[in-house]
Structure formats: C-alpha cells, structure tokens
Amino acid sequence: MVVEVLSPSTRSKDMIKKLDLYSVCGVKEYWIIDPMKALVIVYTLEDGNIADMTVFSNTGDAHVTSQLYPGLQVSIQDLIA
Image (cartoon, rainbow, N blue to C red):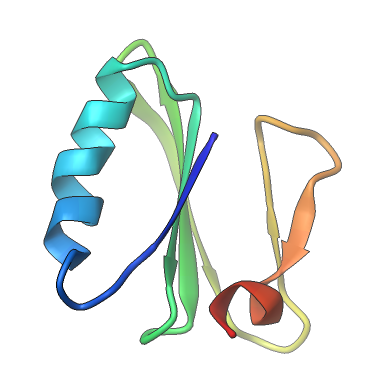
C-alpha cells in the first residue's frame, strides 16, 4: 500500500507516472490525497492494472476505507488537514 499527498509541483507525476510504476511493481493499493480539492482517490491494483478506483470527498464525517486491509478507515478530515 502506498499513500501520496499531492503538491502542485508533483501533481502530474503522482497521478500518472507513479500510478503506472506502482501498478507494474506489484503495489496492491494506492491512495492519492489531494488537499487542494479536499478528496482522496483510492486505486486497487491487480496484475499491473487498475482493478477499481474510488473517490472519497470531504462531505460531513466521511472516511476513506481500504479494500486491501479490511477495517482500515481514516477520517478524510485527518488526511487533508
């Protein structure tokens, strides 16, 4: 599992190049935290491909949940703060 926090200078690198790299390297789950847009994108990766993608937005007391680790959930407020 990899978690990245986007910054303006590395945004495209994290969203495209690293996603491709992590998928071929066997990473199973990739979280991209976007503090500017107040959202988290969770990619589930299998066999070098994107198997699933979920976007979590900052609405109320929303939590980001992991498909890789059942029971793992983090408040989106804590991630984007």
